[in-house]
Amino acid sequence: MKNFKPLTQKEHETREKALRQIGWKNMTDEQKKEDTLLDWIDMIVSCFTYGEEYRLEHYRESYGKGYFTPKELDRIAEKQLEYLRTNAKVTHGVYTDSEDCTYNSVTW
Image (tube, rainbow, N blue to C red; front, side, top):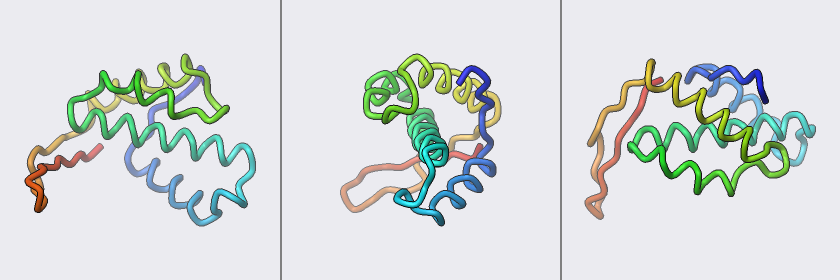
């Protein structure tokens, strides 16, 4: 995945919606690989939103599913984070739940 181009939020949502309509059981291997990529990008965005990018190394072990090597996942994370740092806006404390947990939101 040397030529990974970071995704915008709109691109991500469009691709994810199309894959969800197909369903995992009906996906080709290439579609499953793309779905795995989108899941990884979701985790990258989540860690970025909460200022916990350092956790990606830990989460990386749960991703890939035979489609990406740890090195490829690191490269994808590096490029997507670079994009987010330049283009994303994080809003802190947008919601507090009944257990007093506070949530952030991000637009990218």
